[in-house]
Image (cartoon, rainbow, N blue to C red; front, top):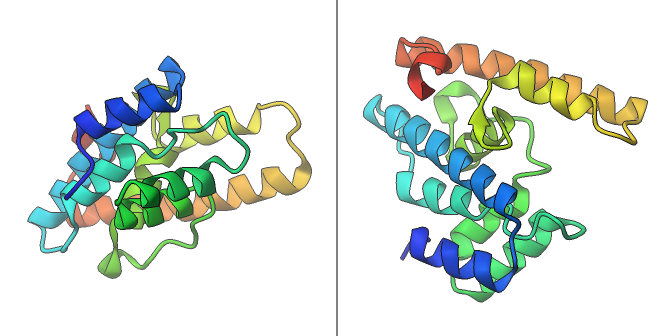
Length: 171
């Protein structure tokens, strides 16, 4: 059993997920599903429904402290252990697997790192947005810039596998 839009709406209602977060989850889910399906067509064994379901609710309790861990606990309690694990790891995941060994967590994190609010914007615009947030320490800036570089490299490798750019894929 996978999380669908029906379960997403029930969870959003139960946990009062803000509308802008719901829209963000929907766009991350769209991007994740497209990427997972494209990789699957190229011989990767990505569980598209699992990635999509986890993406639909990855930020269900974003206003909470440690929203990824808390969201994972909620999903596990509702009987979605695989989605729970992906949600739990989506904020702290890294480094990515090698392009030959991509897994569902890689797809979820790539989608989340390239979506700003409810639009696919790519890695640079998304990371620049994060760098401008208040209370940004030098340590946080360094982690974000490291994540940008590793993500940019992986995107380039995936584009080679798919023989198209992310912009072409997600437009």
